[in-house]
Image 1 (cartoon, rainbow, N blue to C red):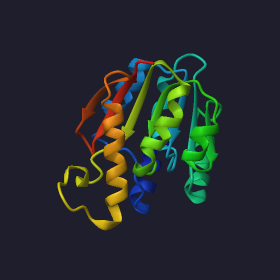
Image 2: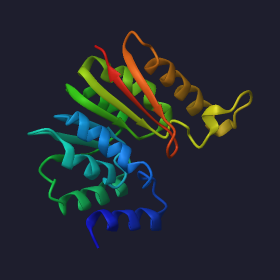
Image 3: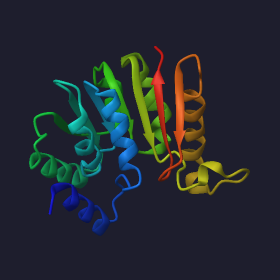
Image 4: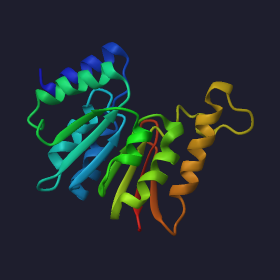
Length: 195
């Protein structure tokens, strides 16, 4: 069994959110076309998407990936250490919102895949650290289809959905971003930073 297959089986067994098989071709083609040099991922989970990105980095490229949950971070570290990309992927344990403020950048590509309610704050903190033409990819934008609900939102999701709508308004600001929305999986946006 390949490492990727082992990770998929582990995620399924543990009920962990990783890229769906239907999302992988689009995800990898975006990374392959960009060939980023410096990547920040917020929301490592078990390192699956970081390992999907690594083969498509530009020469000398690196990935810094941040996970808040210690058990997930440790599992990601274990998987990454067993991969051929252990020297280019740095898994950090910590709060993605706090680290997005302190990590220096500049970033060629940012993949937001952590708490959806923090996307807007994280992106605002990262904007001064983005290279011209940087890509910002955000996963699970549909947030299990609740994003599209009108009127009363379920209480426990109200703040996250409200902040996700703020995030969408920010990346739809054509003065700063060019954004495309993909509906496969639970929705993904890809935005190009105009600087």
